[in-house]
Length: 264
Image (cartoon, rainbow, N blue to C red; front, side, top):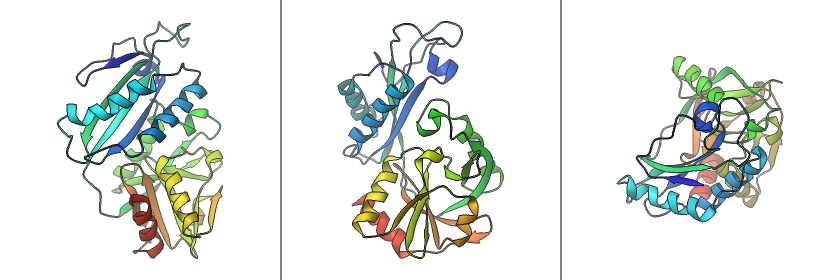
């Protein structure tokens, strides 16, 4: 495996660049540490297994992630650390080398906390629930890019995505939750949903708080009944929605409690 310094450039024959053959993780640097680093590395390792890539050096990956904020001059502030893994160099075409030599790089960027609610729209771009890539953070993220562009073009912050059956899946860069009569709902993983680190923490917090939890396959009409909608990822934690397709949402006590539990 090759580890790259902060200012390195990937070669033009890298399969991650040419084909999106690789994975990434984005995690929060608090100014002191990466509190969920091991969970992110475990998910990347599982993704390598799914994609048929060789195992990477966990110690090297951990060291690169922990070093990245300091290398970027961000060691004492809140930052996003992105760990990128590619299948390494390859020849023309789709076939991997017989023994891929992985490439690994970690970078950090400032990530001030987001405190405002999010405005959402329903994207036309769909997720392919039948693809293993829909449940991984692969380097081919074009559907998410297109969905986010739809949201921005509509004057919104983020897009809510569906799969080919019309079931809700996630936002372009976050997991999706909603609340109906005090019960917590989120799209089931088999709908083509990334098993987000923050998603798991929210579900755990909800069960600790004795909140009824439902992981469901349902269309966007379910949000018509919602008292509250919110998004989660490792950088935003719990971010409530303000608007979705004409519906408006105010503060909600359960969203606030879950946000406090996740950040505790």
